[in-house]
Image 1: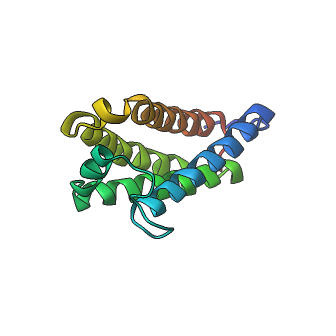
Image 2: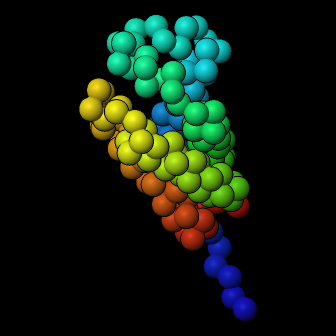
Length: 142
C-alpha cells in the first residue's frame, strides 16, 4: 500500500480558513445576542421581528447554538490543519439547515426580513463542509 505525502497547504486555503473563522465568530456573537447573553435580544427589532423571535422554539435555538459553535470550532480546525474540522463543519451544516429551514418555511421571517441571510448562511456552511472534505482528500488536514 502506498501513501503519498501530503501536499503543501496553499495560501488561498489558509486565507479561506481565516475568513471562515471571522465569519463564524460573528455567528457566535449573533447567537449570544439572540439568547440575551450580550444585551437585549430584541433591541432594534421591528414589532413583526419581535413576534417571530418570541415564537422561536428552544430546539431551534439549540440548533442555532450547535451550528454556530461547531462552525467556529471547525473553522479553527481548518486553520490549524486538523482532520476533526470536517465532522464539526458537517454537524454545523446539519444544525444550520434545521435552523434556516425552520426560519424560511415555518415563520414569516422571509416576508418580514427577506431570505438573503438564511440562504447566505446555508451556502456558507455548504462551502465550508465541502472545503474541509476537499482539504482532507488533498492531505492538508492531519
